[in-house]
Picture (cartoon, rainbow, N blue to C red):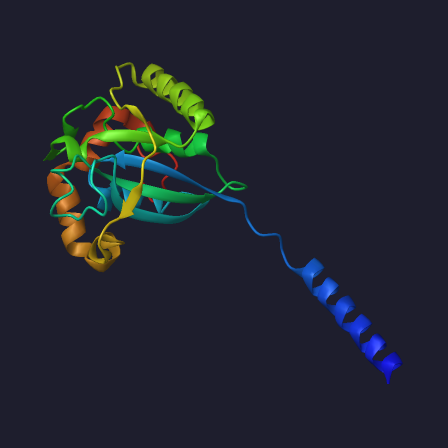
Length: 205
């Protein structure tokens, strides 16, 4: 009886080892946090970027915990997105290149029709490496644009996901979203600023 159990146990170990070896390696992911005005728009753009696996709209950079859409402005939070990406398919540097070209980084007062601090741009860096990459990327973007970029690089703070109705707003309310984006002049102004390089890396633009 003991011999049979030993054989069965060995068979199970062998099967488990084979199954484990057959499984594909898990993708390595990382996150980036960008503020670029209306989070509906930044979320929509980055969900069309190769290698991005998830984009969450939210609030960050302010002084309060658990902010909401109604009170985030008073506490100094910015509308932002948390981007999760597959590091084998894209990189932080590539995401930065796309970010600059989906916003107006020369505007310190907001973005397009949305004015005020909560709609200003920012790159929230998690560590020294991200800061170095962001600084170099900002410099390259300035050279390409030929104008001063005012987007600050800020230390990453707690990120608070926005209310459910804000997530994937462009999918849930496509007609309202498209009208808002058109009326706000976002695409028109980004294209006027960046020309043929506008929305670089965003599929469908």
